[in-house]
Image (cartoon, helix red, strand yellow):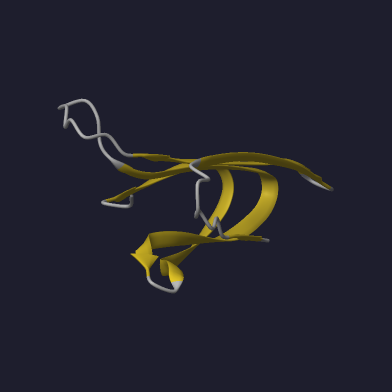
Length: 91
């Protein structure tokens, strides 16, 4: 399966669940952008993916925005389990 979140416009978060033949696939993402920088807070793009056993996914991580829309950085191949990613500087 392919997971490729496309944030844009006024959309700052999304939650999605899909029941596959192997179990539930969960994808969550959100963008944090605050004026004040705190030591415990990082501005950027956060992505959470949970895959059921015996599944694999290609995950595309956005690197930022250009005039034509969202630019994608790396495509990461992952197996079952829970994964988190953070892309700094994405606003």
